[in-house]
Image (cartoon, rainbow, N blue to C red; front, side, top):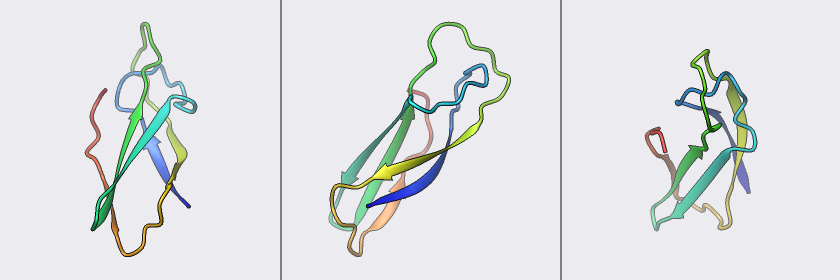
Length: 77
């Protein structure tokens, strides 16, 4: 099972799409499933001309059941 999300990088990336640099971690708890998403840096110098929003699929390895889905507050890695 998976859910679609939209990811927007918060660090400067010279407008480069984050596809291939997105990592998601999923923590399965008794009452909720927590998702944390990280976009790895483009590396080197990057200007801040704006970052595109990019679709991404979060994959689950366990059934969700009645658990709520919770997301982490965006932060820079």
